[in-house]
Amino acid sequence: MSAIESHLRENPYDIARDQLRRVAQRFDIEPGMVELLGAIKKSVEVAVPVRMDDGSVRVFRGYRVQHNVTRGPSKGGIRFHPDVVLDEVKALAMWMTWKCSLMGIPFGGAKGGVACDPKRLSHGELERLTRRYTTEIIDQIGPDIDIPAPDVGTDGQTMAWLYDTYSMNKGHSVLGIVTGKPLSLGGSLGRTEATSRGALFSLQQLMSRRGETLAGKRVVVQGFGNVGSILAKFLAAEGALVVGLSDSGGGIAAESGIDVIAALAHKAATGSLAGLAGTVPVSNERLLELDCDILAPCALEQVISEENAPRIRATVICEGANGPVTPTADAILEARDILVIPDVLANAGGVVVSYFEWVQGLQEYFWTEEEVNRRLNEITARAFAATWELKEREGCSLRIAAYGLAVQRVAEASALRGLYP
Ligand code: GLU
View 1 (cartoon, rainbow, N blue to C red):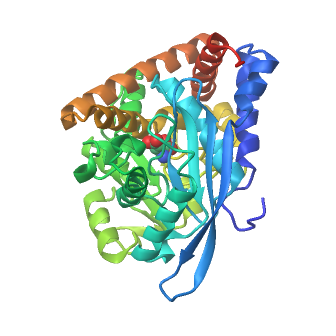
View 2 (view 1 turned 135 degrees about the horizontal axis):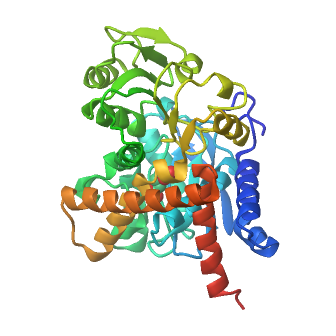
């Protein structure tokens, strides 16, 4: 890891492979298969030269990694963030394989990224960067090969440029090339809210098993991007008390609850959460340690490590982000009886509705929002039930159960297909 100020304390690809080894041990997966499942199918690293607004040229590093395509074309988002490195993209690609498998959708796993700070690039610079990056990886992606989507730092506009660049190169519009497209370009109703809605459905599944509801629960949401901000809104609408929120600029807290709609308006008007009336400032570190029932880390990886895990006061952690809890922290939380709804289950709503968008695009027949949400709820409930059942049977954490189910399904598919030639 060369980026000294990176948010990554540990190598994420080492973490992902370590998780796989532990799952394989628990569920008796043979060593050859573990080696196969731990391998990255393909990874490309590209230079992305961009003409900046001042006339100068800057060259960014871009990546696209396909982890495994045994169960279908690879699927996964594209991240624009200054800390993006190849091993992070590899880990995120592997987690996508497990996520799609756990949810029972016919995709493998992939991820892409460009090391850049989208907040410091103009609209024009971002467009040129996205189009050049797309062109550099154009032979790696395709509606039957590898289908990108939004992730940290990218959105519907980014996907629109990717869609247009790919389609212009092919000579016709290719709806299935990317998901997370704006509605006016063949996006799916409910896709923008899907990750948060899936997290909400997962939390509701947990609550119903405990004979509880979300009403009155004290919630802290870390990260106020697409996932965190919408999840906070959904939870408040369920009657939960949002006592802490944060974005990259810092956090805010209020014992009596934050008005999430006012927070959204404040962020839109000022660019940050800081200074929202009725709240007190709190650092991003302290925010994670606030007294609450549910903590939802919805930003980047490794924010809960062995360093702060002993001080977490939530009783449930809902991983809106990918990889926010390190394995060492996981063990500490488990020993402290803090239940973690793992990323591959908690934030899978995004890729599930991406799957719906891909299907709708291929059929050129679009569903109502109600249909999308109903099917998302069905898939989430099914995956949650299977994971819960395995956890109870094995006496293991929800993470080991979720990864265990996912990995075994890919292993089974791989054994059935056999090795070519
Ligand atoms: N980036 C999201 C994730 O990590 C969505 C991926 C997708 O929709 O393909 O799950």
